[in-house]
Length: 189
Image (tube, rainbow, N blue to C red; front, top):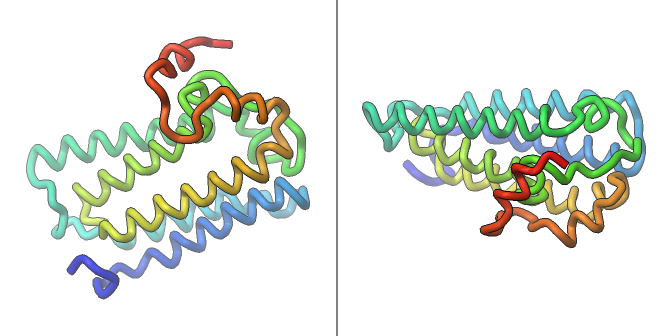
């Protein structure tokens, strides 16, 4: 089965995880309640749990050594995603102090494009579809919701909270890096 009728039941948890990501960003933008700091990590746990519930290894398209290669690629995308969200940014300022103004990060992976995590997320979910049997519609749905989240961040949240974000928007592509962005990514300042 390839449609909504299959037995995938974790996707509502994953969508609840994204609802918490949106709430986290809205709180950061408008309210600044420290009590809502739990939204981001809780959203991550719900997204992870929902995704794991819907893996159907026996239905995966990749088999044997090809599956191993795709899973390794997925692990690399996951490592890039974790690095981008927690190590390329000052994590404490980004996630622990809602509503606080901070400088926009414009170097490293953030010189490639303004939301490189979306690319890594899509890579993870593409690999899970191919090698672990995650339904394609679910991978596409979660990638689409993720794009919606970063659109909200890019249009509302980050311009209000990140100093220098407007100049960063003008100089750096939204999602897809251009040919010359790799050199900018390697620059340290």
